[in-house]
Image 1: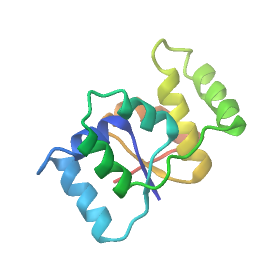
Image 2: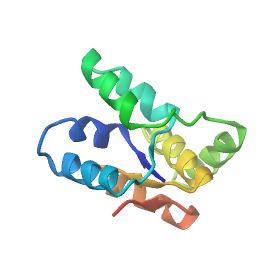
Image 3: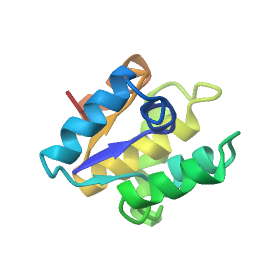
Length: 124
């Protein structure tokens, strides 16, 4: 399972982008693709067109709900990361991926590498 973060999905919708090519390869390989409800919310905040929402809905599974286990792990990641302003959403996205055992596809790997010791895997 691979979870897409918001930036990855937005760039994947741009034809012939690096992210588009990676997404197509995963789809051809029948790799299950998902997204946390947190990333899905960011995506829907746009700007994004109805056709992009419809396409993303066909490609991705139902967004993974954020639950109490995710909340506890998010708090741990946030506190261990120095409570950095603007990082809470990344902590939430990482926690959902860790809980579900999904690798995370992101356009900002530097923002997420700090979560690897907690069990996050970045998609190659």
